[in-house]
Amino acid sequence: MIAGAFAAAIAIGTALLSLPLATAGPGRADFLTALFHATSAVCVTGLVTVDTGTYWSGFGQAVILLCIQAGGLGIMTLATLLALLLSRRLGLRARLIVQTETKSLSAADVRRVIGRVVIFSLATEAVVAVVLGVRFAIGYDQSLSSAAYFGVFHAISAFNNAGFGLNADSLMQYVADPWISLTICAAIIVGGLGFPVVFELARSWRRPRSWSVLTRITVIVTAALLVLGTAGMLVAEWSNPGTLGPLGMGTRFLAAFTAAVMPRTAGFNNLDIAAYAPETLLFTDALMFIGGGSAGTAGGIKVTTFGLLAYVLWAEMRGDPDVEVGRRRVPGTNQRQALAVALLAIGVIAVATFLMEALTEFSFDQVLFEVISAFATVGLSTGITADLPAAGQVLLVLLMYIGRIGPLTLASGLALRERARRHHLPEERTIVG
Image (cartoon, rainbow, N blue to C red; front, side, top):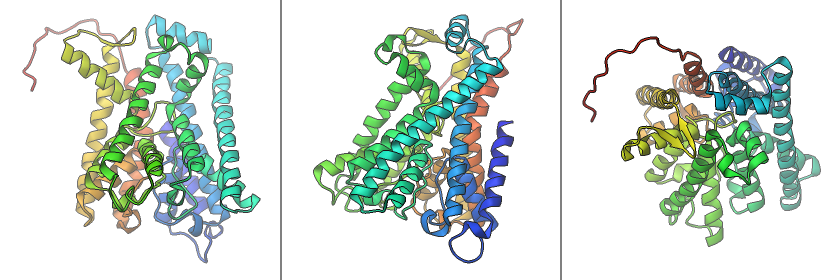
């Protein structure tokens, strides 16, 4: 059902973007261009083959914006409802916690959950749009209508981690503007945390000991990745004349932090990615692969998956029989689900990279970056997207689609297939490593 819903949204978006009314110039967009941008918008990725602000008309930009909103709200709503559904498969304590919040999964509760997701999303986007609109009007001499439009477009794109922008250089001209950079970063982080985490933090941010395992892992790993990402950008790009080198001291820290937020599947770029050092590209690959929080607008394998695997490794190194997060023990089925999601994601990226290498003449760094960006629904690029052959662009379309619905449907499917066994085979250890 999830796969069909997203495919239908992409089909509708493709049809609308294929209309002559959708392009700013004469004629109409070809089928592949319309399909690519509809998929990128619905899957909240941000990869483009043409400039959004000049190629598409006002109608075309409105279609892209509606696709972004539908994709972002859709994934948050579906993920939250699946979390409620899967809570029936959890232990007694977890069920009681969920029941306290949701009472039951009746039709009324489903409407209430969807309503809260929609209200929270629209309210956050409205606040961000006002802040950005005021800045565009005051700081960049835009008319009120233009500033308001720019504010709304970038607010929706940022909160939904889409990465579509109306400027050809994305956010590069705002690299030294903390008002715009930090506002967009805040929208990206809030949208990427996930609806359940945001509301639990709103209720009990003063009582971290009472946080659920989901919230605990999401907050810890998100904070760690932001710190490490900023530090990594500063170290690798400090003297690079194409990125941080020409900037002042304070602007370098602002630019490095903003650049560290973007691989969390946001897709905007405030620095020239084509000028990144090879180590920075590899570092960014890792950040994009991990992604953001579960039940949010971010992509990747999710910080919960990565964090849970880190806890598993830590428990194994210490020789602990159980994996514990805070004062909770994580069941073995949950650990296997995280391992399955991560390994399958690695497999998809490996196969896609092999195919893209065979289809193009670009370097391995560029190809791997593009593949991970598409699969993790990030939208960052070294600038090769428009130059890829048709087969390469179709491959990116498939990666964006799989990356958007894959981790969610796979994780929920594995949980729903969990069943009790009435017998156990004899145990035998094998050599590992």
